[in-house]
Length: 393
Image (cartoon, rainbow, N blue to C red; front, side, top):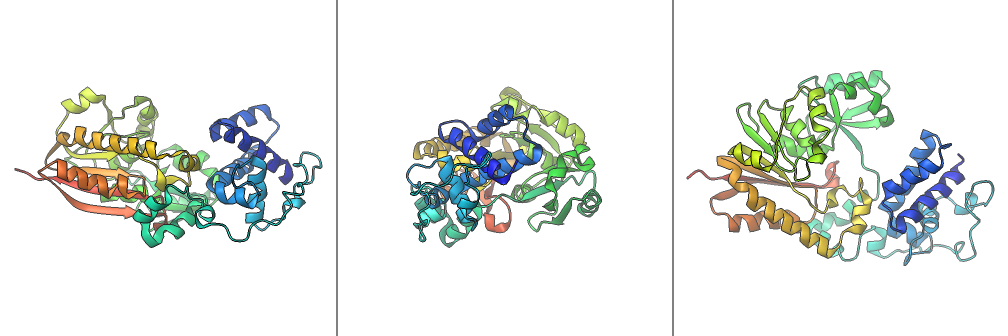
């Protein structure tokens, strides 16, 4: 496919998304009806679509449709944002998009409002400013970019240096990431990872650097009993188990999210006990309970840009209630002297420090010993982690 044809495809997919389809569904539907498109074409089109979703407001404004975005306006704006003349690709020739109309050809605005330029929803801007302060503009500018590809090295199977060398032999360049001693930042040929022997035999996993840094904060010992209560796919469970040979129990309110965890654990040489709610309670108390709670995901909007535009005040309030409920339901699972680790991939104070403070007011006999926030300026996703210790009586 030509560059113009790829842009035309992205316009079609974006219009499907803007009409109500999830971006992944729109991409899949397009690929099924255009089987001639090769893997390189599909990857390039996917990049166009997700770049446009990360920069929805600014691209729409640059494309002349700030109030009502369209796929066409978004791709015109994307080209202008990159300093490329849209007229050179919107030619109408072959499979290229139709030429620009007179209104589309007008010069774009040169001074976008701050929230538009930063691709920030207006209602969220005050909350983010309260949470990030002076970091708001640089963090939101980073949020407009693609997320880095970061690997976690399984220390049970290899070392970071050996993994880096073996990847280089496969033509995959990676450098140590400063956030965690297990992290490698992939700088060249990330598309080769899925077929890499290191990935296939469990020596490496894809995992954000800040997520790895959170795991490195956790008090893990070989004799501990550890519960990952909101395990999801089990990435943090596996990361913990690679650090210390404790007994690991994984639970999720939607067990199907953990369906791949047994195979991933086998590949990594790790044993994990998957448990339902009744079994979780019967195995308590635990020395460490990890709560990677449902949240706005504002720290990972680079990876899931739809979530930035889908979040509403009502949904945020609902998530805060879920977070409070999980804290209240699980803290009794912690043994005296044990730790409750409260984690989000959010940058909002309302989901982070405010939740911890409110819990400490509700639950006497607990103290916060460590609290740390990671932003995109640290080199990974946005994360928050607080270690809450149950004071022995």
